[in-house]
Length: 565
Ligand code: ATP
Ligand code: MG
Image (cartoon, rainbow, N blue to C red; front, top):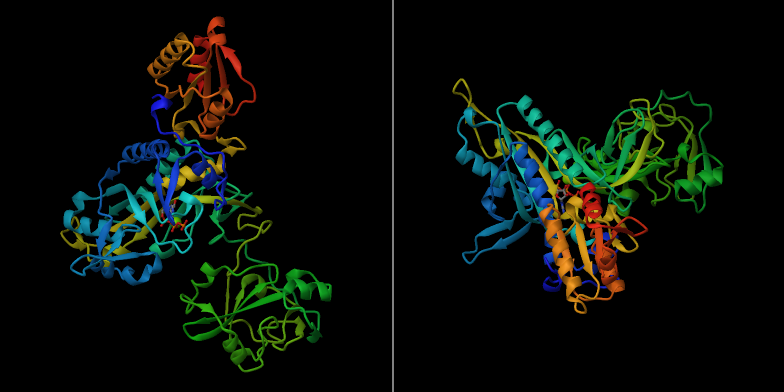
């Protein structure tokens, strides 16, 4: 490939609305252009990278025994109604009508479509297990599409779905997919971790996410120093607290005229933040509920929503708070002035003695509060908080936090979809059995952005070699001036390509400064300069993208160096 015949369109300007480095660099490198919110065109340059990622994903899925197929992106409403997700998927589901006023959606995921295919194709246990996958465009009408390809509305996903006669076989395939994912992210040259995850709207039992580690990642991840325990903070758990100590203090009302936050109250009273309790008022299925976490903790919405009656909870309004607690927010507490209220206490709160809560009266808090004496034991004690760095882990280690970008997700779905869609096969005894399902997603387009987020510097992108648009750039100085330089560069390109290297010739005739700046911006891992002076000395100037100095190498040394990668 000659860059003079390629469409390379780089820019020095930093796009104003791009917050993340990956978004900025993809725009500056001309890999993508925005069509509309969350909708991007992949340029010839960008597509080279996307295809390389896709190839690795395909090769490893094939190696793992999965079978590629392709489902339509437009899917009928009736199919999605069978599982209740036409409603439940919410605003992310893009609904469309055809000329006959029939309703469809643009597939955000494909459990329904694949289960429909499976129930037409699979009738006997002899056809199981099977794992079907596709690499297909998805659409999710994200509330806030942002960060370019990181959270787009239209994006490329690899989604796989497996079918099994029993749970043990599903568990086996789940491990097989985890191993395939580990190979994929390792081959792509990314620093990543697999973590326990919440199963979210897709549902099911076991689930793990694969995260590319990067400080700008949207997800907080917790790791234990005591074992290989790693979990998304959405579900991460700390060790249970020790037994509740005996109370020492008497209950007293303290004046907190303007102190509405736990931090301010703790500072005023001169006590540790850990002894204050935050009351979060919510409305559940059966009405008003007060959720309690320690002042230094925050409520974990996912954990809270898993408790009985709180699946669809929302924050209580000021009017509801006033009605149930007789107070304005900022001074709320579980010592109820207006009759019984339902209290859900985090495990750490249930283990406190002599703590501080709001007095349900503007300007006052209660100190020296003790369970059983000053208020009834909580109606429910559960883990409803986010872990924090330094928490003790169940394995005795300490929890550390890091940030990650979710690039893959594996689930054991169980029979949720096969049951709802009445999919059965005949088992060995001729009885109808409902197959168990697994599903396995990879954000193919998100991987491209995540790789940049993890690997860039002031000059531009630092592609891991397997993802680079080309691995070697042969830069020609003054190609027009001296035909022998151009011919030598062409010969070198042929030699490199012959050696199996994905090399490109930069024969655009740019001055060295702007030419090198482009090659660095688009992240080519290796640069070789062919110049009149070098040719006279029988050498090429070689520089790795990550090296600070260039070196002069003859063609044999150069090949050897490039083969090392
Ligand atoms: P997120 O929590 O980031 O919204 P998700 O958990 O909803 O993602 P899955 O349903 O697990 O996503 O989809 C599989 C993969 O598709 C994700 O691991 C992620 O890499 C990718 N993905 C999901 N939503 C987007 C998006 N809006 N833009 C780009 N990639 C996405
Ligand atoms: Mg997910």
